[in-house]
Image (cartoon, rainbow, N blue to C red):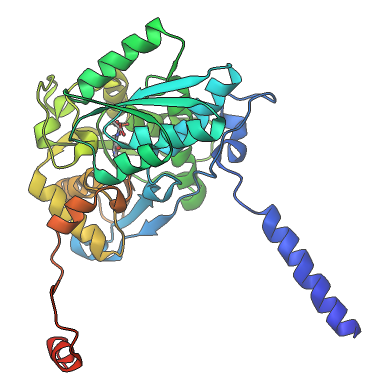
Length: 370
Ligand code: F0G
């Protein structure tokens, strides 16, 4: 009897300890590094704390002892890294008494803004390029209850419009020009250093508006200044060839790419992204559509499903592989979940897919090779 009581009390204490260890969301986890105060109402869906996964097949592909890690930020609550910035932006907007938020988006920002605004009891308006937002992202914005305004124009036009609306009307802009967005997003760099014990030599990241590369660089530097890492990574930003204003240092009027998330011709964080690249001794490179799809499939072979824009980071790594020194560490950021863009997945895979089969056991087992 005594033994049984002992066991029960042990289990109980384990349960309470475990619940104490529950991930509190990134604002609570990193509050000393974030511009919040005791009266900030924290709007959270427990974002952050995403896995850093060793990419074993990719490592074989690259060789020379290079260690490759995938920061799978597609596992955030709405399926992209945007949640890191949105928990901050929406919490601060609520603290400031805002009743509504607005953003332009290629899809992920709108999904995230819609979810966090709903949770905060605020209204969300999202401007998107009509016909150029992946189905999963559009579905999310609708289900989270945003008011969706699809324009006959691209992302750059939509961003110009929301900036002007937010200047004229009482509504908070939650694109990455909102400084709280980058504050939240920098925590991904903290997580990488917390897990690896130091920064990697290289960070490969897809670049659209240039916000995330800026945020990572900020995060790495803050930890460096706190002596939590002795080194800083080279920031390698990758854009799709048809939407590569930063690579060619030239505005792109009509950006095009299968990676619709980064279909951007006039990045709003242009200057900051260039600074991150220069100060880190990194570089911007363009990757082609077929390189993006090849990388997308290779990531699938790791058992990981990301959206095409995210695969640009791995496509880029493959492109620059000869620059890597032996045994160096690389982190590729997988910014969004593959489920966001089912059309891309269905149209770009090497799977065996038999359709319209008779439900006949003999035929099916024969087809399976038995
Ligand atoms: N990867 C994904 C999946 C994205 O959704 C974005 C941007 C990026 C990379 C590029 O990040 O803009 O900070 O350089 N998506 C924005 C949106 C534009 O509206 O969802 P960035």
